[in-house]
Amino acid sequence: MTMSDRHTAPPTDPGDPGDQAAPHDPWAAPGAEAPQARTGPARTGPARTAAAAIATAAGLALIGGAAFGVWSDHHARQRPVTPAAAYRTAGSLWRETPIDTLFPPTLDGRGAGPGGSDRTWTRVALAPDAECATALPATWQAPLAPTGCTRVLRATYTDATRSALISVGMVFTTADGPAMTALKGRLPVPSGYGFADGQRGAWTVSVLPEAPVVLYSVSAFADGRPVASPRPAADAVKKDDTSAVARAGLGYEAKGVADRIERALRALAAPPTPTAKPEPSR
Image 1 (cartoon, rainbow, N blue to C red):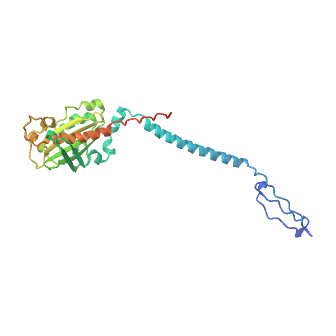
Image 2: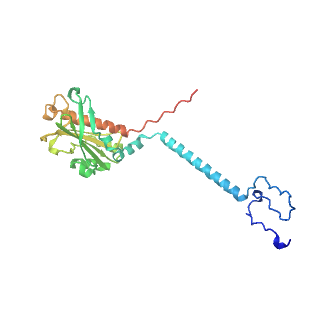
Image 3: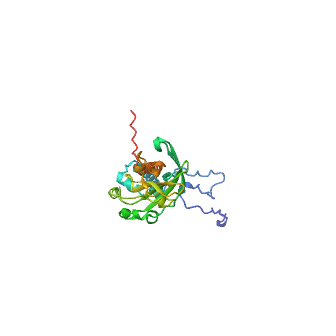
C-alpha cells in the first residue's frame, strides 16, 4: 500500500476532546476491536464557568429586586398618612375623582325636609370644571385671592316635585388650614348654576376642615320667580321665618343638598385609617 492509498479522516471540531469519539486507525489489523471513546465528565473551561456565574448573579439580582419592590409597596401602604399630607392631597380631588362620585346623579334626602320629611334630589345640570375668575361672583374674588383658588366644580339638582332648583359648588384651593379657616364668615351669597342671581332664594357656605375646599349651595324657585333678598339657609329653616323662601322650603333644599355633598367629600378627603396588624397565632 502506498501513501496515496491511506484513508484520510475528516476534519474534527477542535472542541473538548472528552466529547469526541476515538479516531479510526486505518493501519489497525482487520477484525481488531476499535478503541472505546472516553466517557469521563466534560471539562468546564474558564469562559463557561464565568458565563454561568454571571447568569446566576443576574437571576439573583432580579429576584431580589422583585422582592424589594413588593416589600416597598407593602411598606408604603402601611405607612400612616399624616393629616397635613392628606389635607394637601385633598386639594387635587377635583381632577382625580369621578364626577358622579363628587356629584351623584341622585341624592337621598331621608329626613331632610320640613318636620323630618323625606327628600330626593336628581341632578339636572353639570357644569364643566372652570377657573375661579369666571365661575365665581365678583364678591368672592377678593376673599379667595390669598388662597390660590385653582378650580370650581358645579352641579344643579331638582327636588321630586321639580318646584325647586338647588345649585351646589366646590371651590378648590392650594391654601393651608389657617388660611382656609380665615374664610369663614367672609363669603357672601354665591351664584347658582342654571339660574340668575336675582332668583336666588336660600344659600349656605362651609369651609371643609379636612381639605382646602369651600362648598356652597344655593336654591331657587324652578319657575324662575325673582327673590328680593336671598336668605341664609340656617335662618330659612327656622319655624319663626315666614318669608316666601322659608314657606317654600328652599332653606331645607339648600341645606339638605349641601349636607350630603359635603359629607361624601369629607369622607374622600379624610386620611386612610391604618390597617391593624393581625395578632400572631398561639
